[in-house]
Image (cartoon, rainbow, N blue to C red; front, side, top):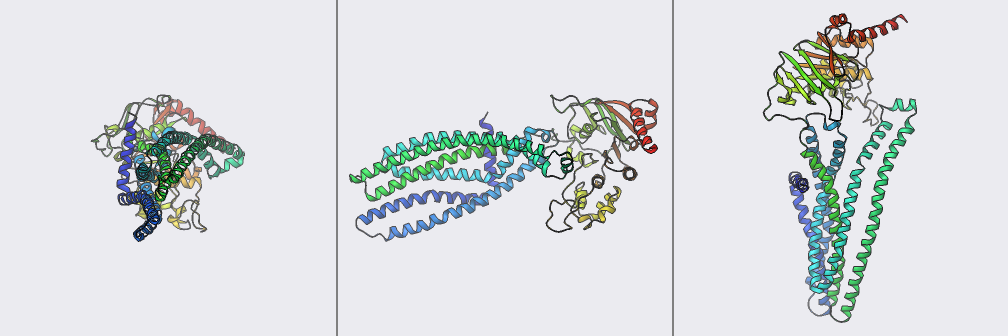
Length: 598
């Protein structure tokens, strides 16, 4: 079973080379073969020339041949380097595109909330970047084998015994290098969690989001200590591995020197006895040096291939990762919402080690109505939104869209019928127009739609007055000396941009508004909800808010508590019930009354 992933990675790599750089790879193979053959030809031509010089006869052909081979030998490394770099660029580009396409095919969020998967993804990214090195290693191994074959054949003609000694000396080198390569790759993969945490702390220390708190609370030194602790842990593990390598390579170098010295002594004594000619000695010396370097190349390349193969295996594993949510081979079409969305006995938890987040929820969102979800933090509101968007599937129970179980539908088609403004909305480092158009890319070339969505969210006047209007970059990350290179919006303005993004999608049946006004002042909140009432007309709306004044005009209000529906009704009936909703509403109302009275 262990060979199955390895063979899958080999097939994946072969397919990658065939798709990304077939012509370049073919040329690279030809140059690699030439690099292995030319040194052998040079050695033999040198022997023949020396033997001819010691005797009689013309030498012109040998001199011309050596000159031509010398020019070729001098040119091959540069050609090889160019082909290597070009193949590396092409392989890395195609591998990276395939990797992100594979992660893009994931239907839900489970993998992206799994630290182990994220660590494998980081290793896989290295496999993409090193795909060219893997090709270099494969061809380098082939070049070394061909070079060895040529010179070992030459040595066999001169001294079979010395040839056996050289080959036997290579065995411990190969074993040691493979062992060291395995330890090296394992150490590098093992410190990935440390690198991930180090990167997290570095982003905190250099990013704008945490800058105010870090400086106000004086936590920079503490966070820097945590960052450096992660780096120190990783460095210690790598340093320990490198110390083993130093000891191992020192021993291998000593073995190589002993074998080379023994060969040199034998050749000198044989020449003195007249058993070897001057040409024989030259080719023997070239052969023994080239054989040892070839053996070292094969051993080192094999070890490096093992290490690079482990990184590429992680890449192949990511590409083979099964879907996190099942997609039916023949999905049921998602109809335009006419009846409503019904949750029946829905239970959910993120995995078996976590507690239940939802516990037997029964809930109806009638088509064309506005339904509100309220409840304390941790009551399950955000999780319920993830289930409605089919970012997760219920652990038990069903969610029906006009009777169609969401698990029987195509998630991509389902999501085209949903618009959303999330509480943890995104701020993209692109232009104002693109920040909105990312809600529906069909509007990217339609400024009228983008501006209409911005007007609906109450942010049109703000974006229109930016230095470059809607084409202004909403970031200073790409500042290049131009004072108008970018603008940073306030939190409330960003929230309105996110609302505009959610409103942009035309024809959606369900609009999810998850705390759409949490960062706004009372006046802006009032204006936004007035705009949203118009935007919500004709749609089914799910409104989530901790501010109960924002949900009082909802047609139906569900109160969640501990993952269950505790109360259901409209604002008036829930106040009359004098339960959880009434208690929370009075608490907020009393707070507002105290503020006004003070």
